[in-house]
Structures are given as C-alpha cells and as structure tokens.
Length: 171
Image (cartoon, rainbow, N blue to C red):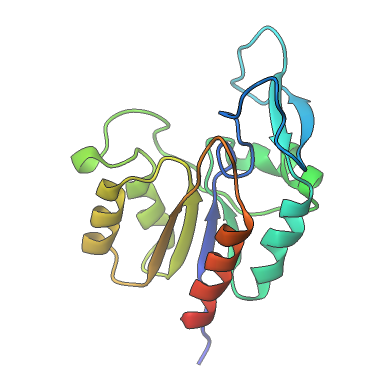
C-alpha cells in the first residue's frame, strides 16, 4: 500500500516574512530583500524579511511532509522566496480567486486549501487563520488537519516548527 505524505501548506507573508514587525527594527536573524513580484505596484520594490534558517527548518520535516506554497505569491515564491531560503522548487496552490467573499466568515484561502488537499492530511501555516477557518475545516475535511496561525509581527518560531514535527509524527 502506498501512503502519501501529508501536505505542509506554506504562506509567505506573515510566517516567512514578518511584514507587520516595526519597520525600523528588522527581526533578529532576518535579512532584508527588495523584490518586485508580478502585481506589486509600489514605487519602490517590496521590502521582504526572510530568515535563511527557515529553509532548513522547513526541509527538516520534508521526509514527513510534501511542501506546497499556499501564498498569493503563487509560483513566484519559487523565484523570489525559495532560492533565498535554500528550498527546491515547490508546487503551489493556484487560487481561482485572489480576493472576495468566502464561506461563513472564513479566510478567502480556506475553501481552496481544502480543494487542493483533496482529502489528504495537511498542516497549514498562515497568519490569517481564524476560529471560523478551524470550524470550516473540521466540518468539511475528513482527514487530519493542523491549522497553525503565525503572528505576522514575529514569523515562524521554534515552537511552530516543533508543533509541525510533533503533529506529523503523531499521524
């Protein structure tokens, strides 16, 4: 019997790029990058903070997970984010709609995360997860799911990586 790994769905802004940290204080361990992904309309390139150690932290449980970008950067995360973290090219969720209404107060990504997971177990790291999303996933997804909300001012931390490893080990 072939068993597929659970998915690890990775958002960029918030978990990997703590964009809401005070602008004058780059978080410890993070490097500043200037990027101009498609759709960025700012006069100057976008400031993105990335911790290069996060690549190894995400790859560590790679034997337990199949890594997938779950970000509005979509496939451009492979160009702008992945190489700076030492990540290989990853599949991504191609959101049918980037903005707009979502079922019962859920985050706009949630319904599409469930479609992408297609009944597979998954862990999802994002800064926009709410209790409504947890309830929606519990009602509409029969497989195991870990929804890990990350503070967009801090980004991923050691306890987050530990929770991902423990959850995968418990499956």
